[in-house]
Length: 504
Image 1 (spheres, rainbow, N blue to C red):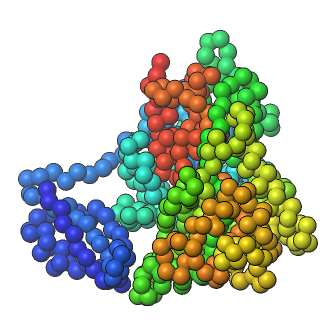
Image 2: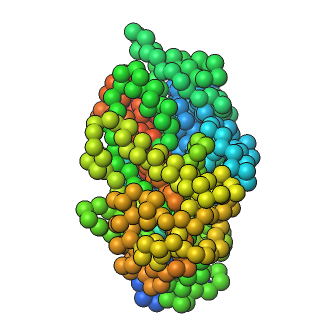
Image 3: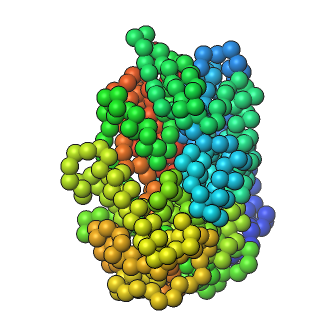
């Protein structure tokens, strides 16, 4: 096998003659595609070439088994960790019984529309809760650095099998798109139920009991009761009630670092101009960006960048303002947005309460809401906002630029509303971001981006993956504090499913 690369100008794909010339008569396979914009922007296509007597490595998925008559495993949560745990259970011959507090991916759209239009928060059905989890309506970014934890191909190939574009198998920064993900999520559900698995929506878990024989009974607030010898807990990064349930029963919890900051929105044309050095043209993907800085001993970094996207309200309860971003598959909107956040560690807040970072997160979300309402905001989800240069200079913005955020914005002193440990670091970092014209008053900061990851960890045994306080319970995904994003959560769900089935 040999590897080779073909470089093309933006707007052009490799020509067959170029590929064959570099392959030298060997069979070739495209492995990766990326844009290199460090100098003159170009496409880079990376290939592997094989001699006739060499075997081309092809990835194949295990088959899904019929599990109608198999022993159940309860899976709490239908986000990426829960869905891929359930799919792995099918491969291993166990029957997944999925309990999801929210609604199916189609029905939850109506609740999210009410949230954006009227500010009505359904605590069980919103941008965080419901089939597909928080990732179902936030662009579907699939980039991850967690390849050592499992085989990313198992996740990506299944997504393609359920309707995602094959491009995700070769793109350096793959994404599906918020308009495409619901179909993928529905197809996953159909596969699981066709093979004998179960889905129960509107099933918010409020009790997990284990008898002397190691058998679990999981009860829901709606009166349901489900039994199995294994439970996979995949409830996402915002399910405080699950943490409280575990603590109430004497279970161990730990405060965990997370990140908090703002959503930053630029006109997409400015990001295109910066990243493509003025050479962007129609048909070329909307430009992305990312950066990581260190300031006063803490990381400051961009997060969940949505080219051509929109900002959406992600509150899970009334009286709070939380923002997130999303993009459709085409990424062709007028604006680019990203979270820019500051790392918060347990030692930054006094005490030993495992909820202290989550309480801190909640107070900031409430502060954003209270300020906007004190200023006569017309919408319950209106967000406090400030132009970037004004924020760094500590002055109120007199006029707001256009924004994609439907509930609207209120001019606010975010440099005062944000915790000082966050505001002062952002004020120092924004002017030194190494992107031309990134630091500009054309950029709008909106508060608050706070649901980056869980501020609580459910400790588990590193070998068995079982909850240290309750054998047979497998905490996984973002809510347990062991992943961040769709792919890493899916991989963790797969690992927990394997552990649950293989351990006696």
